Length: 222
Image (cartoon, rainbow, N blue to C red; front, side):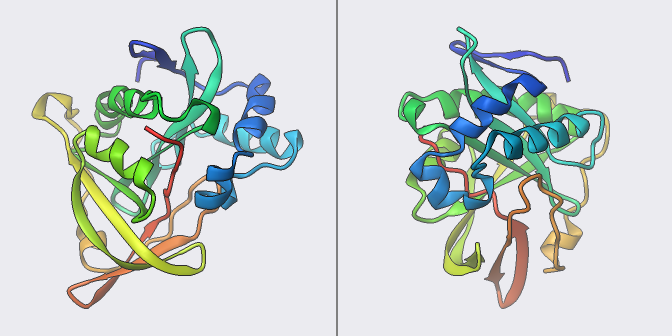
């Protein structure tokens, strides 16, 4: 995947060790504490450790792929990511509260989808969030995701209403690599996600069969 990925007002690139301070600062806003408590880094040292881990994933296709969102002036405002979930992938994103409401998350996700789906050979990708996370739902819907499931689920140890969205790639986005099978997800097999922030899984039923997907309940505005 060629980087940086450029959009009108921002670009997406790889993390470097010098971003630990901004990762720490961006993680401390109220929305992140509410929707992504496991992605709050109280110290710069914690942020530095996770940045090092994320950098090590860039050469892999079976680990979380997390990239910083940068404004054109070089300001780091959040991240966008693709998370493997046993034969499927989910997208995630977060924009710091100070930059929410300006359309940056939508712009970043829209720019990120074609190259990451080509890199991974995907014909579809999921987006999962709490039903009351209106900002994340708007971003997914603006980027062409379709609601696939809405119902009761377990997230961060609490039972809540969960929304799962699905995005289908146009043929021209797809690489020659066959898209991963979704048989495990569709059969209700328990799916553990090696996500970088150790998020708890979401558990929700469909037609009486429990399903488990990684929590990517990413707030941060549209």
